[in-house]
Length: 124
Image (tube, rainbow, N blue to C red; front, side):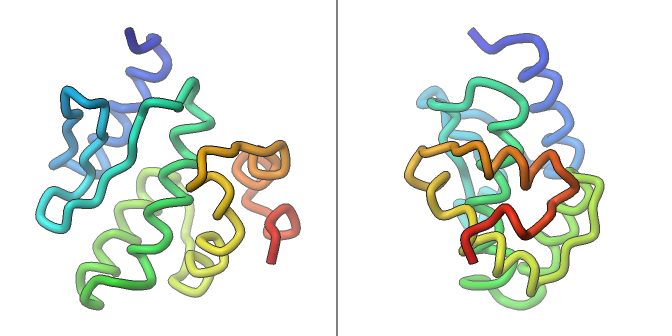
């Protein structure tokens, strides 16, 4: 069962990513056309969902997709996070949050995500 705060956060995700839905396998599908998703299985709180989205979506914001789609995704991420990241910063975030993609949340990741997105907390 999803806790109330996490459920509220998923509604915030839906505002920025209107096509969002959750599969029976616990996959949060953010962009169905390009199969962009994250697994919610090891997400226990709001902080982790934000960090996991940054860790995974930062790649698509600066690689892999056509420029127009990258810009759209970057705009959606910035709307969700209430921030103004650039493509270059997303590239650094992708490099710096690689441990999260292996399901390893570390204290420095929390410091980055909730300390004003200070890049000194990332392994760059």
